Every structure is written in C-alpha cells, then in structure tokens.
Length: 250
Image (tube, rainbow, N blue to C red; front, side, top):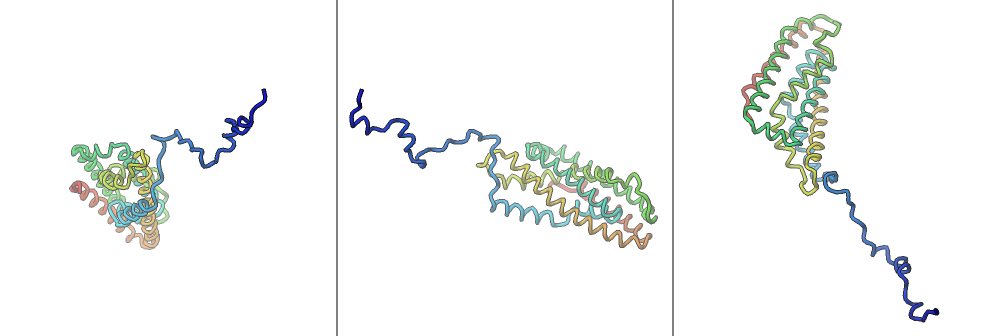
C-alpha cells in the first residue's frame, strides 16, 4: 500500500531514537550506592584533620617517652620495634572506636579502670626489669638476649599501646568530628581517619626512637654511663606507670 506524503515525513520510532540529542539522554543512576559508597574526604576537611592530629602527636607524650627509653637502653632496632608494636595496639583501638565499642568501653568506669591499672602495672613491670638488667648493658658487643629480641619488644609495645585507655578517649573525641555524615558509612571513614593517625604516630615515634638509638651508640663508648642510662630508662617507665595509674579521664 503506497504511503502518503504525511506518512513519509513522519519519523519512525527508530529514527527518533537515532536523531535524539545526546544531551537529552538522562544518565542512569548507579544502583551501587549505600553501604559500599563512601565519598573521599574533602581537601579542606582533610587539611584541618592533618593539622590537628600532627600537633597532637608532635607534642611528646608517654608513648614518645616509652619509645625513647627503649631506644636509649636497647638501641635503634628496639626503638623501632617498640614504636611499631605501640601503633599496632593503637590500631586495635581505632577498630573498636569505628565499630562503636570504644565509646562503650570509655563510658564504663569499671572497664576504664581495669585497662588503666593493667597498663600501669605492665609499665612498672617493664621499668623494674630494665632497672634490674641495667648492668648487662655494660658488656660491649653482647649478643641479643631473649628480652632484646624484636618479637618480644614488639609484643611489649603492643601491650602498652592497646592497654592505654587514653587512646580510646582521644580517638573517640577527635575522629567523629571529622566524619561527613552525608557521605555515608561512618565506620569506614573512622577507620581511614584512624589509620592516618596511626601512620603519623608511627613516623613520629620511630623518628624519636631512631634519635634515641643513635644517642645510645654514642653512649656505648662509656659502659658505665650506658648502664646509668639503662637504669634511668627503667625509672622513666616506672614513672609513666605511676602517672597512668593516678590519671583520670581528662
């Protein structure tokens, strides 16, 4: 059947789709949204976060004194192992805070006190051990004893880091302030922010430890002076334990 001129001038459905402007096609929204979509932290928010965290970490605190005391007494390798172990303990606290357990533990006076006194007693124990073994440092070129092995030193640093309740309070107070609620999945954001904190702390503590270990190499020229430094590091750790035991939540 012949078509009329009007029919020939009427565009077909296929023709309309071919001649449709590309700007008129509406893009489909991605269905992969929700729990697995997390926006990257904005540059301004990240800059402020890095500034605040760097200032907090740069101020020498108990963890720095602990790493320095191990570095002066046992050397650079021991200092770095202590720093890595300490930050591994802090990473566990970051996970607890990200999944809401940190706030629960921090609000519980009983749990806070148990963690505080356990960490304090362990620091005192390490300090007493360092004091008792100070004379062993007078022997030059001694082979590493069981207490000087990196694995054991890492474990000691981990216990000190994970048992410090102040970490839970600091992470619980600082990290949530930089979480963007509109981006979704606050847990992942907390984990990322906490990981940044731990990495900055690791660089800072390791740097302090390397400096202390270098000083130990210089002090090794005088065995008696090295023994005195080892005893002093033990006293410092005992003091840190006592300070932690009598500290509050502030």
